[in-house]
Length: 276
Image 1 (cartoon, rainbow, N blue to C red):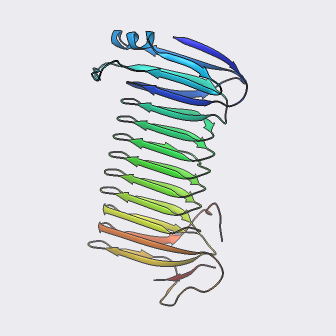
Image 2 (spheres, rainbow, N blue to C red):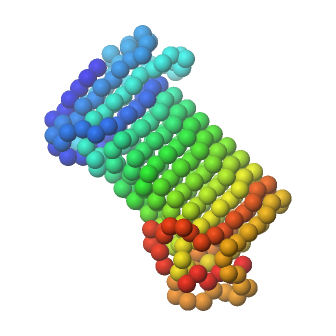
């Protein structure tokens, strides 16, 4: 099934699949193209009964199985949408990957089993995956990512970060806000932070935190069976100065903790004074 809608500028994409991949690729201003491709007979029946509509500035795509049963061993459906940068994405699939090759205004994505890969998001990002990796480039707003089994990798995030995975690594290049990160089994790395508090827990995994220059910090780090190391000058006094105070709290059961000077600046960079 193919449909083309004549509409200028960014749009709001709202996509729901029973099973299959959702892919957003660059398009030409003035139109939005939706292409649904079934990979087996049962999926073709779903495509034939799919809803693909333009509702104002919302492009609505729904492919659902009537009833509660679906054979997830089938290869499902690929939904490819062509639109311009600045569009927003709300996507849900019970089994499949979600990928965007354009810069999104905001994104809210959910997949029960599959990877999430987004180029950039200028606003907020919310991503949930029961089994799969989540990767995003730069996020201008807040990032809230949850994965039961999979790695989380983010670029520069302008706002707060909340990341949780039961089994997988968490990696963030730079953060402009606070950080809350938890992993039952996996390493956690925040390469640069300088304005918000950091709270990290890892039951089994190493933790690395990069502190931006010109930042005051208070360290509260504890590991049951692991090493704790700081490359920063430490004192027992409360940090002085007018720069924002970053409170870093790290807990690990089995894993090393390393706090170091960030190699790259955080989105809002502010002389490192540190209290341990």
